[in-house]
Length: 188
Ligand code: GRF
Image 1 (cartoon, rainbow, N blue to C red):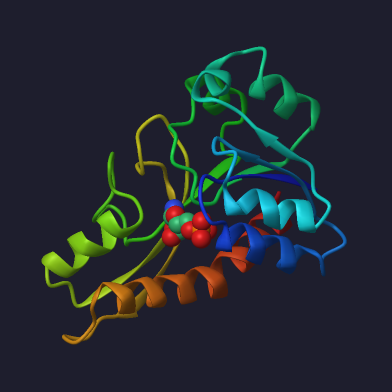
Image 2: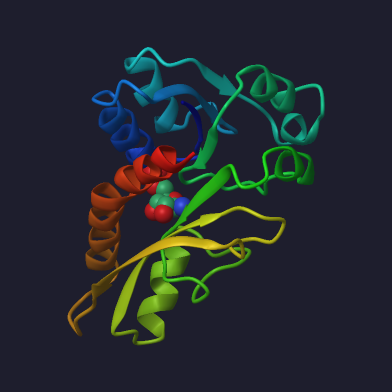
């Protein structure tokens, strides 16, 4: 079973996923892709000896670029872990049902274009939500609209500020994202 990770940011999820699957001999994290040359996610991959690929926005949509590399890797799953660009139609048609994303809210609430990172948490706080959580879902052509695989919730209290919400979400991601990916690979 081969998985590629796509990430744009610090890569705490990339790190957790890599660590988790070091113990699973049936699953190989085959590659880590990023549109940001300075993404922390790339460092976690390099440290673990996993091949990395950096590409421009244009190269993501170019049929002869990222797509060609991905095709050669014969992947079973593509995991978006904090990846901020829209996945091109070409990928979605070729890898239907094999691309999943992590979103830091209980979709359909607080999803869609522009809803990432602290934008999500600020919106959750502004709406005085009593709970928040993470959603792991399939990727389709619309931002954050693909079928939901699993959601994990956590209560919010009145004293929770932005930092507290971020911490709660990070805890959910660390605890549940790798095992949800593993459950999926067991079904493939
Ligand atoms: C995570 O909160 C994830 O839910 C969202 O982007 C963030 C990425 O964090 N899609 P990191 O780069 O894995 O630390």
